[in-house]
Image (spheres, rainbow, N blue to C red):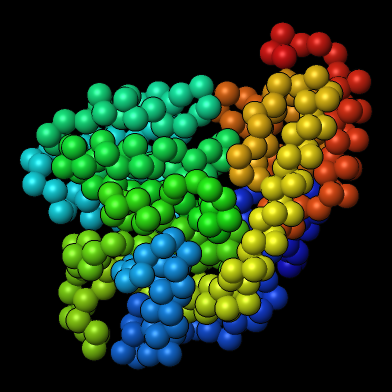
Length: 359
């Protein structure tokens, strides 16, 4: 029996969204090519270089280095790996806020480095003083988040940069989700901050490319060179990605989406999504719920465990923060009519819910 992919009409918690039609078409055309073997597949390799340049433009880096990764997890792992290998520390550590994506925890375990997480402030952003207190002479990397997955918050990247500079550490920004929204805000988040060394940005999220299409950008070629290994049976001599064989689908779809949407298409999408998030936050607040006001198109609200479970029973694909709040991400596929239907169900389950101890 052949399964069919589910509809996105009730998906409200995912940071993935259907690819743009041009990106889907490009992915299919380049599905069997391998940018990991650029001498054999030069067209897709050239396309990857163009994507890196385009991502650099988005992230304010005129001479970017990097590659199209399988996603934010690979990019974050490689950022930690590069910092570890470029550090002089005997026992390197990484310092990050507790809101850092779990892929950084994976990176620390895989690479054998200590991960030190610090408390965040009342706005769910990294506290530079706490980050500073956790650093020492063995700190190889400080990580800031630009669009956190639980609350959509942007850490104070310039202040983290000062801490990194004082500690002699590299600074990585995880903008996997936020990178295609933040150019249209007044946040300081990218390579305009001089201390930023590496940055994760995923075209397969708000960039509307097909999965898998992540991105790792580096200010210096030496950072990418630190990741390179020899490839003796290929005509190309080295490879810096964590994966070897990579489908050209991700590269081609990212190139197509960027050509089609940067910058005005992304701007229009962000403005619509942000307006929806603000409207949803107001509606939930009017119901008497505690709501974390959105700074990017992500809304968190405390609706209680029983109401959350009832919404899942109604087929809504929602998720929770670690503190238990409902989490709604207003991705490009999310519409006002979807949210109106969702709010109707929120009202219904709240009316019918029996107070429970966990609420």
